[in-house]
Length: 483
Image (tube, rainbow, N blue to C red; front, side, top):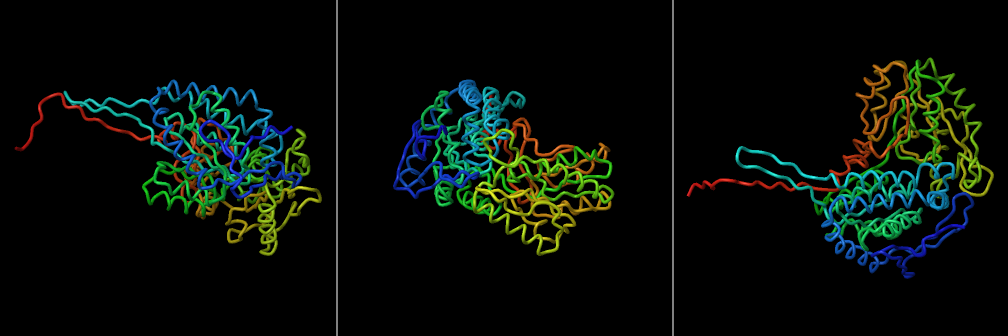
């Protein structure tokens, strides 16, 4: 049985329903059937969430960091205890195979809560001696934070944003994607069960209009978005009007550069992880795979062999390792890009078709002989579509890899570690990989440069984005004044 949330919203420590909101059916991507019914937040629900969060934040911030951390760590333990049921919910929400969700989704959310729970008690200021005078600093919460999630990692994103916010003493109103609304509610429920005071972490549902209402509210001090670049630009502009703090974790068109001397099996594995994990629905994916000319034929041959072994089917079967797209709409977007790739002359060497089965399944798709000016090499597709490009030498690969508005991730496969570090040093991206791809431990900062975002998720860097520093000058002697 699907352990569903019992209502659309979680506010002030309890589930809340308001059926006056626009219905938001939850569609299981593997079958197309409706598995739950949510309702969009009405203005009354939005007001309830914001006023509750603002009121609860002051008391939460007054607790010691150690006390706050204890709650987060307890929530992490509960998530791990219920990993299977939360993973099943994630699979119903997103369509991702259980073979992924059991190991990546709720578990990474728990990692974030544990990590920031451990940091919470260490968030101190500093003492700055100035002769007999001195300055001390205090790290303070920002206040009320709004989190806006994407549909590809609903449990993880709810925790990635909530954990550092709560560790620093903030409260949060979180709006998940209307496509995957279920999992964040369970995160809120578990946080409350772990001892989080009512109102500190609230979840409400809705489309972009609800997000816009949250972002533009003057009571909100911080906005953190995971989403597309166009959405990020709109939210960034709205937040700037009131000088709100922002974290923008946006999209990419990330390069993976594979040199002739790379270990072929590992390089192919990295390309598969960077294009077909979660059916290609990952913002940091390496959808431009630059293969040095001497390795191209061997790379494509081995890639095709390994793609043929993909287990495509029922996401609830743990043997399945490739699932459906998240929605009919997203599948149609990707199908359009596949057609554009063919129309512009790219060589379709694998996949390219919708599968003859219920649900939103697309074959893993590979284009070779892709050129930099093709649409599929320039625009984010967010689906299981790999573009393979070839290059002659290092300088050419770097120049072409950087020729994009995006800068989220980049990767290099080579056995020459001097070259690996040299190339990574010249690539314009925030989250990079050497002989690996798409690792995202909570201990490491995650985020992009250029149009791919502002700020960083995870690691100690996230603390700076959810807190502010107050400095206090202390004079020990007399004050000298001109009159």
